[in-house]
Image (tube, rainbow over all chains, first blue to last red; front, side, top):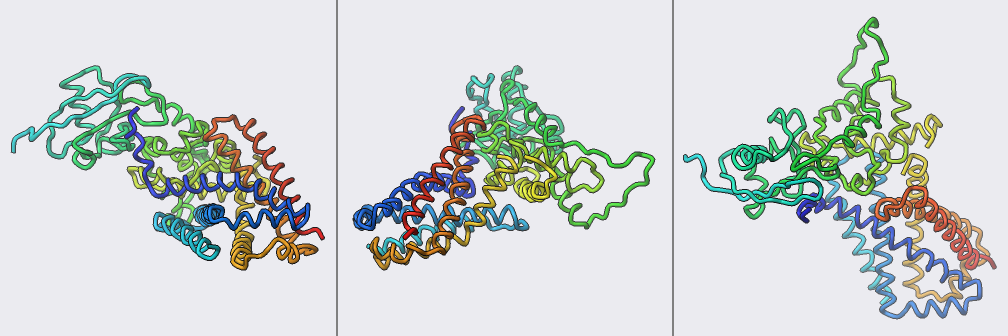
Length: 116
Length: 243
Length: 109
């Protein structure tokens, strides 16, 4: 049926759930790589240091800032869900979801400014 | 004022799930509802148009359809408030099979009410004294907040979790279960909690809150489902239900 | 998703709340100080506290991620709950193995 049949989805809380899911997928893909890199230390500091030096390339640092965004947005978004499910009902959730996205973006930006 | 001020192009879904939209030109009148438009098409242009309605005053929950992409109760939806770019597109409710034209098959919707133990199970008989219920007790308030559902299916059609997981009981059935677990006269509490804690139960809800956004009765099924999640976790931790 | 999976997913999430705050602080500290691998390892090797903290973090994150993966495979991948559960269990077990190996690499002297 036509595309306009799903306009109900264009809503902040629906998008917040989408961001939560996509950030979760991103983190789930990143985690094994993260563990493999840290596992390099088993072969001594030299191997790990070689990789850590690689992470000081600007392109890699941008990617790391992206990971900070994923972690913070998934963390804060998850806190909002835990609050919805476990606390008495509260309003203002569209505002909170928007603030979470903004704070996560700021955290990633601060990270980038500090490492660059 | 003259009767027909101007005309409106309206696209109505025709056929089954493999059907298509067909456009009709209808007169635009003051205080016209979407249901009025559909009825006008059936009476003046095509008597084979199928759709469902009964009360026309927002009580029965029969007439919900997808209007310009959103599930709405068509009898209480004014055309002028939902027109987009001079267009009106009406389709059957989403997340349900299409019977024909604008009539969706609501059987899966009501089967899930049954699966969620949506029927009251009396704990007393007619020979017992009537149990006094205080209207301001917290449980009764919670039940009252959820009780005005008219079973229109708008929340179910708006829920993407239903769309992704056909086994999910959905907002209306779970909201009904919530009003019953808060009814002190009901005797089915533990087995109802077990039913809504199984695969497809309340724990699938992602709190998109589209149900709340689209409920014509301004109910909040997401809040009801959050309450069920808490009660079911208490029952799970105490070992009253297995999952 | 049923009550049991919900218990483990939301439970692991709640337990990770303080751990993520600590982990973010560690990330910001280590990157802004531009610690080398030797400097990091000198702080972590032989530390029971870091070992227990990150060991627990790995277990919780693996539980949380594997249940999330199962749900996504069911909802977006249209897998049956049995096969989604099997794939997610393998993923979770791999995360635990890789994660504990990483913790051991960083913490064992």
